[in-house]
Image (cartoon, rainbow over all chains, first blue to last red; front, top):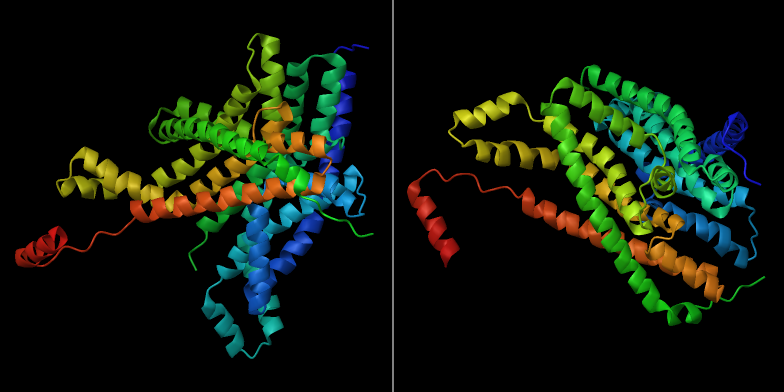
Length: 218
Length: 239
C-alpha cells in the first residue's frame, strides 16, 4: 500500500531516532569502558601488552566499520555465536569505538608533561595516586573536546548498522521510502533529525576545544 | 562446536576481489581528487573571501559533517531522481563521498592556512622573495606540514568509508565481497579476506603518505658560511 509522507511518517522516524540514540549511548558506554582500560594499558602497561593494544588499534582503524559489522553479523554465526542484529550492531560499534577512543585518550594522557609525573612522585604519591589525582584530572580536561567530537562520529556511525537490518533512524528511513516512494522527503527528514542530534554535540565540542586554547599554555 | 574454515571457494573467486579492490581505489581516488578540490576552494573562501561566502561555506561544512555519509548517499542516489537528476550508482557514490570529504578537508585546510601568521608572509616579502615563492615556501608547505597528519588520516577514512557505497550497489570491494558471500555462503572467510585487503590498502597508503611527507618537508641544509664551502658542496653533489 502506498502511503504519502505526513506527520505519521515523521513520528515513525522519530521512533527510529530513539533507537539511534539508545544504540549510540550503549556504544559510548561500552566502547568508552574498554577504551579507558586500553588507553591506560597502552601508555603504562608492560611492553608486550602495549604492543598488542597498539596492534589491535592499528588493525581496527584500518578496517571499514561496515566490514566489522558484517564480520560480527554474518561471520561469527558460523563459529557458533548467533548474534541478533541488535547485539551484532552493539558489539561491532563498541569494538570500533574502543579503537578510536583509546587512541584519542592515549594522546591526552601522553600530552601531560613528564614533569607532572615527577612532581607527583616527589610528593611521595604512589603510582596509582599519581594517576588518580594528578595525571587523569588534567588529561580529562584535555580530552573533553575531542571526546564530545567523537560522539558525533558514533551517532553517525550507527547508521551503518541499517545495512544488517537493525531498525534505527536510517533503516526506518529506508522502510518508509519503500512505503511512500518519496525518497527526497524521507531522507531529507532523516538527515534533519541526525543534524538535530549531532550539531549541538559538534558545537559543544568546538566550545570545549576553544576553552583549552584560551587557557594559558602549560 | 568447532567450525572448519574453508577458504577454497572464496579463493576460487579471488579475481573478483582483486577487481573489487581496484574499483575501490578508482572510486575513492576520484572522490578524493574532487573532495580535495572542494576543500581548497572552501578553505580559501573561508579565509580570504567576503563574509557572506564564509558563512555559506560554513553552513555547507556543518550540514555535511553532522549527517551520516550513508544518508547523504541515499539522498543523492534516491532523492535526486525525484527532482529530476538521475545518477548512476557510482556517480552518486563519488559525488556523496567527495562532498563529505570536501566538508572535512575545508576545515582541515582552513586550520592550516590560519596557522601561518601574517607577519611570516610580510617577513618573506621583506626578504625579497617573490609572491609565488612566499605562497610556496612560507604558506603552502609549512601549512601542509602542520595539518599533514589530520589530512592523511581523513583520506584514509575516505578510502575505508567508500565501503558504504556498496549499499547502493556501486562497484567496489565490499559489494564484490557481498556478491561472493551470497554465492559461496562462506561469510566469515569472505569478509575476513575483504578486511585483509582493506588493511593492506590502508597500510600501503600510509607508507605512501609518509614517503610524500618526507619528500615535501625535508629540511634543506643550513646555508654555508662561505662561498668556498658552497662550491665544495656543489662539486661534491655533481660528482
